[in-house]
Length: 349
Image: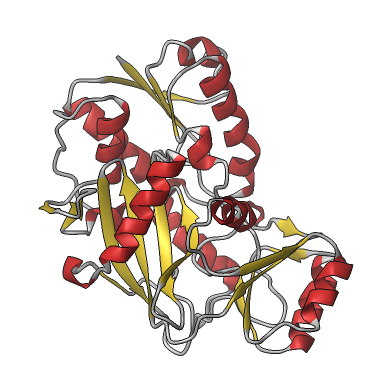
């Protein structure tokens, strides 16, 4: 058995990927690092039992990862993580919304427009405040509260004009961090996720968005969101609290992992979606509506691994809680290698 792990080759091998290697080595499973620039890349890939390309939402990954994963999964017929149904909508809130809406899952009401005329017509009867989001971006860097029609009109004009670059939503600092600009904050958060193989230049984050616009209903009185991560038959939960004086929780770093505080309704919904859509791994962010019903705000196949490990355990599909800290890499490998006896070594956060 051989597992291949894609090596980004833009810095040191990130800790997130090192943990895959550590688990595989601990269990005596052969593994190799791969990069498409290697002359024998394709011949090595076709011999694999599992190919891992754990990519994130930067421009270079958006360019390359879907190409390689499609060929490996669908042409070479090698099992992949993530597979196409898991990554198809990654870092694209419009795709997420269309997909979940199609299956009538409970989601935060959202509106997407692909032409300026339709957006302006809808705006005449829109109720404020609204939440504006670019399709891509993590840690709230591309999320803004739209309090009035004037600001909404400005966003429409720019999105159907010159466009808006990720991290530079007009009229707001997406993240208000003292002495730290939007790009620096985003870079720091992604570097924390990737380890030493994070972003090396500003252009990795600067993605231009134009010719669409996406709004979500603003749900007041949410001081936190509930993140549920489903990996196979396991659900990990956490509460993420808003920044002081802000409505956004993602990227705040303010989280608690007391499992007794997690709403099991969120867990049930997350299990239902993952099972119905056959996701290998998925994180769900829940907010409450005015009737205290949990609604999915966003989803992502990946999140910082330490947030899963920090959970004191996991729920199974029967909502029975099992104690013990697990790394998501361990869960993914155990599932995709069909090895329930896989052992998890001690690894520090």
